[in-house]
Amino acid sequence: MHGENIRSFTDLKTWQLGHAVVLAVYDLTKNFPKEEQFGLTNQLRRAAVSITSNVAEGFNRYSRKEKAQFYAVSLGSLAEVQNQLLVARDVGYVTHQKFQEVAEKTVELSKATNGLIKSCRSTVLTT
Image (cartoon, rainbow, N blue to C red):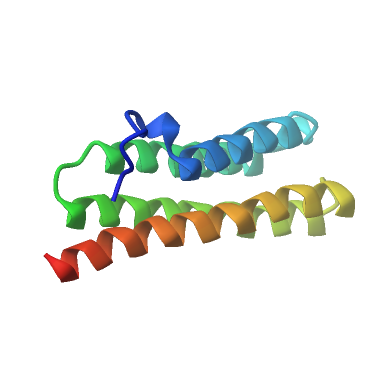
């Protein structure tokens, strides 16, 4: 499931894509209104960090079932980020162009995370 060149969670494409989303979210939210500091800004940042945190934790679990569970939680956090980005766009905190840039990163991350989950589950079924 994890290739031989993958020694750390930071070597996973999923984590790398997730980290790019985290950085994009931090960049995007630094210009949100001050009154959102403990609202949407905080929610978006926490959900984004949760994506990579769960990938890291899943990577370090021993059973494939546990790995898949953490990767699935990561996917849930990604859905939160996608929803919160829509809110940020619709209330005017984010331009359509910036929204599109980050949204595309989240779609790519979603595909990679789903692939990681499938690889865990398919290995479970064949062993």
